Image (tube, rainbow, N blue to C red; front, side, top):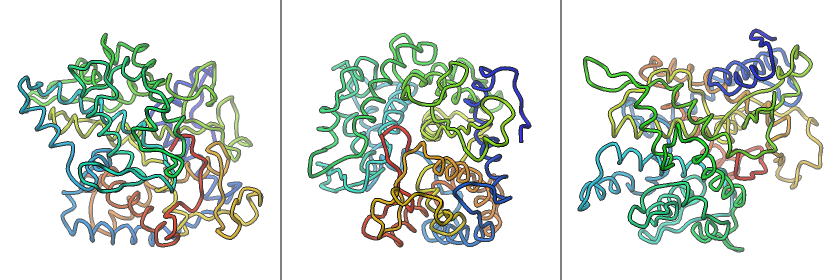
Length: 440
């Protein structure tokens, strides 16, 4: 159970912040599931084919057989909920009296997308956002996305009145819970889960930008990642396109954003690890300190997927090593597995006190609960397996249907749709998570 060993806790901590560690450690949990050795879940691999078939029907409904048209999973779609917003904003910049160059357009998009993802933790079932321009009302990820682009356009994240369409350290430092609440239309009648945690992430982002000028520049803003990545990129001789390895972006985000995560998170060797948690099922097999820890880095992964797309589209860059990216361990992807029977909670595994409404049969757990750790670890590996089964049913290769496309067109959307079918009143997941605005 310990195929990768390290000489010190600090080395283990460094490993747990890498992209390959996510799949490797989640794979350890999955191996236990195959032997029936998880504490909270039973695993039913025979249900994977049906889960994939459910996803295939959604793909065919929305894209027909034009699989190449499926966009990658990313924040862009949520920002465009109901109508295009990102491209019109780009066109507005291009037609301005002093238009930005392509690199500055990309910087602004990175600014917007990164902040939008940090605001994207679950808002709960009750919150909605009404867009003034269209009069349309949005909820959940789409509502958070639309609200974030409106806040960006209003200059809420910028300290420079001459350049309102940017995110900088000083602008973020000025944010308060009341300011964010007002911008997101939060009230007693329109409550949002995790408002304080969400705001603290943005204020902490200000500190992280200032502390990591290597990644974010001397005038710190997220968009300056473009310059950092360009400096380490390779020029393709045949096409003039720049090639950037995904590890470069991942490392910049893992290191550069480390200060934003709550101090209460897991640490090892004096290093705060972020979205990394102990798994009870692994403890009995642990041979060294840290062997029981499972990294997920969900928000970092969501940021990574979301930032790759604008850089490839606007700058024409090509990111290599995307096969190292994993599926995102959050409640839509994980909910799909529970609602379609791939995973089932063991009867009696959870105390009755964890069911706020016994009639609903839905438990509510904190993100640190060991059942949530098992659920998330299983989700990472099962997304790989279901993606393979989807490709098999469609007769496609990994190059023809990437994991990012599966997440976008099938599993995340499928998790939401099956939740709405099974729980039409709320559309919520089969296992509720107490969101503090910093994990999901």
